[in-house]
Image (cartoon, rainbow, N blue to C red; front, side, top):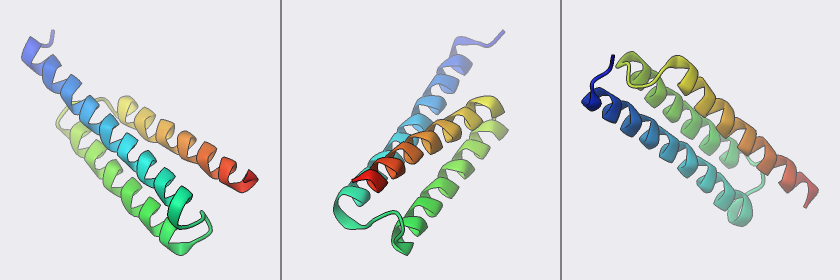
Length: 93
């Protein structure tokens, strides 16, 4: 059984990772609304860099047993789904 401290650390780690995923989504929304379109190399580079950084954060948290691999995969999958929705919406505009 996990101690209260361990549970607290796990919850905080997941919340921080989720907040970072949300920041990436917001950054991409702003970029799509104001700066560039998804076909632009700058858009691709920002997205790739941000996603790589988040995946490394998640990997680190998994190695520390702060989140499970499944939780990390779910975070990335959810962010990718939301980004795909944004991309599709921008294609229709």
